[in-house]
Amino acid sequence: MLNLRDIKSNVSLAPYTTYKIGGKADYFFTARNKTDLIFAIKEAKTRQISIFILGTGANILVGDKGFRGLVIHNKTENIKFDINFLIAESGAVVSDLIDACVEKGLSGLEHFAGIPSSVGGAIRQNLHFLSPDRRSTIFIESVVKEGLVLEKGKEMRVGKEYFRFGYDDSILHHDKDVFVLEITFELEKRDRNLIKNQIEENLKWRNEKQPQLWEFPSCGSVFKKIEGIGAGRLIDKCGLKGKQIGGACVSEKHANYIVNMGKATAENVRDLINIVQKTVLEQTGFKLEPEIDFIGEF
Ligand SMILES: Cc1cc2nc3c(=O)[nH]c(=O)nc-3n(C[C@H](O)[C@H](O)[C@H](O)COP(=O)(O)OP(=O)(O)OC[C@H]3O[C@@H](n4cnc5c(N)ncnc54)[C@H](O)[C@@H]3O)c2cc1C
Image (cartoon, rainbow, N blue to C red; front, top):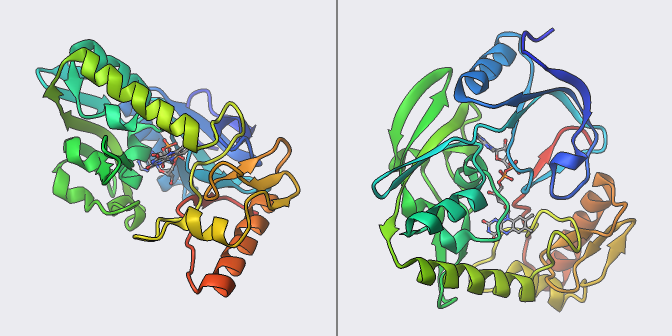
């Protein structure tokens, strides 16, 4: 048995995901500080138990049969400011950082308003959204200065280049023995009202174009962007909006979202993903690739 305080077993993961889907984890541990997080990772490795680090659960589909191993719920949420630098633990929630930045009049993170994410998840996926003029994409890497990571059991302070950021990509996709512990963001002083306006504009845009979590649980866009074409547009072109399997449905509002209509299973979502991929490939020749992580057993 794992030597972790307050460890739980057979915990349903669905409530910890924005999809509200997924079976049980064999073991579930909540890390509330860096020491606990590092200890839990090392403890599982020593005992050769699989680990999954859970942030806000916004980019994952957990299988109906759950996860064989230890889920570490990362609730290391400390943040501190040093002039224009923000140092945040990896479990801190991006929307909380944005609120704190508004208070301080610090700009850079407001572009990601309305996106559910922990700092660790944001680094893994290089969180991104449209620029204020909606003509280009802003990535979180643009405000990352450095980080503290656990690589092969060792704590290392690393510069931004270490993360090898790309579109929906970073070193975390390629090296399973790297965990984010803390990130330092470099921000700029800006009028608080201008930051607030940007947040409001982004939230309005998102509300108009994308299904909201309070309407339908989802994991955001399912498929990776296809440069200059758009995965959502291809799916729409194939007439797949509204296509439903069980409780999973291609959103009418945004075709790259597969929403949970209430009782969707992971199997429903997976089957629908397969149908969308097959149809788009047959009708347009484009191969859609999921950007979300499939976790556990299906
Ligand atoms: C409604 C909605 C809208 C969205 N809109 C956008 C958008 O506009 N732009 C965008 O980029 N994304 C968007 N997303 C996707 C999602 O918000 C991001 O991918 C987010 O960064 C996921 O963070 P998370 O904490 O929820 O990660 P999780 O889903 O909890 O985990 C995702 C992966 O990251 C790994 N991970 C998490 N923390 C760590 C860590 N500390 N160290 C190592 N690995 C770690 C996990 O193990 C897992 O493999 C949206 C999602 C939803 C539900």
